[in-house]
Image 1 (cartoon, rainbow, N blue to C red):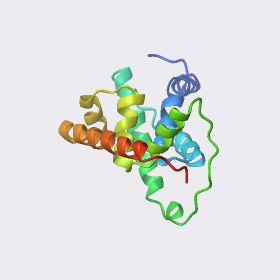
Image 2 (cartoon, rainbow, N blue to C red):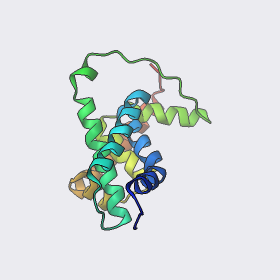
Image 3 (spheres, rainbow, N blue to C red):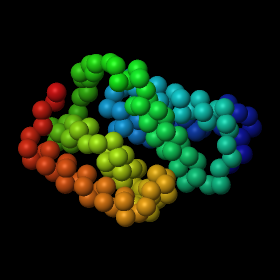
Length: 161
């Protein structure tokens, strides 16, 4: 797609992908403030690099990859390792959504990511494999293990600690 200027391009990309980037950051960090920081960093990198994409799938995959990398950098930072969590008051439409959200937050990061991409972004296993640069069988295994772990967590009851 051809845009008349950089601002139009960035505005369209933010409008198109802001929810996806934020939700993925939230799924990976479980923290509103960190998700907002990652969101800003992703679109700042887009503005700096102004990459040319082959297709809509390519631009979406690029943004997912950058979001994953930014969240990985944040989660590995010394700052994050030396802070205490504050209870976030997130409201949900139903108790079931509340339970599922907190169950997903208890999963290891590699499981949270595949659950998010598969169920919330509707990517196929093959597409997730390409985005994460991981073997398809590994993605299948992670999805299977994540589902089993979610079932175990939900059946065992969830405490929102």
